[in-house]
Length: 272
Image 1: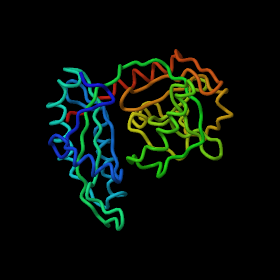
Image 2: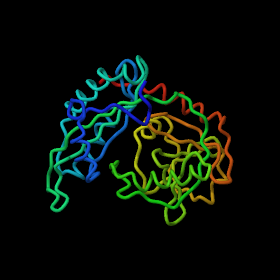
Image 3: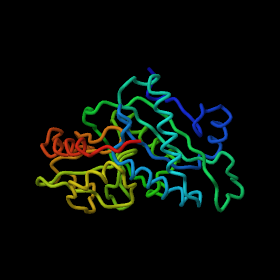
Image 4: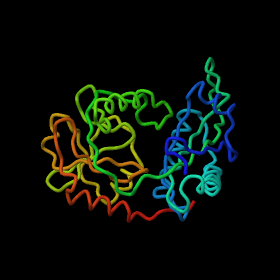
């Protein structure tokens, strides 16, 4: 079984070479989406993942990707590499659009990116609640799921070195925005509250908001004590409770969180 931090990778439908990896590492210019693929080759929100790739590709490369080719690459990578990761079970697939030949001195107006697919073991459907601390940080180009994770991962690392599980970002005005690699939501008086601010709109959160629209509001870090529960969302684990943010504790067993978990599992998954 492959270690989660060492996924198997394919570039344009072929095993990735060291040369391609080196070329990509030199710039880090690209974008991606991460999806959970079931044992039956289905994905919740596949259309939203593909729409994200199209949107972000236009922003970064000035072109539109061939989404049918992307789907074929994902299907092939899963079929070939599932046994090396976790036979028969869900896997997490990251689809990155990269341009190894991208000119850093004179970036082209338009570039045709290549499709890098990595496959790794999926986390359990229900994970232990997270204890997170806040940090003032706003990602560069927060509405684009770009490959530049330096700031987010450095901030996460600092939190974990201090004994926390993860980090929750707040902006310069002290408003909650997002986690390092996840969206955040809160429960107040039985209703879901989605923070409004400069953050990446996650696919999992978008799927949940179709059945749990709740309310959208700016949430100051100083207002967290007024919330009854808090949760994280991403495609890897779905819905995960937060047990604490800084010194504020939340109820990880709140019934609304179970309702959100069941609502997410009930989302029909689309075939690859």
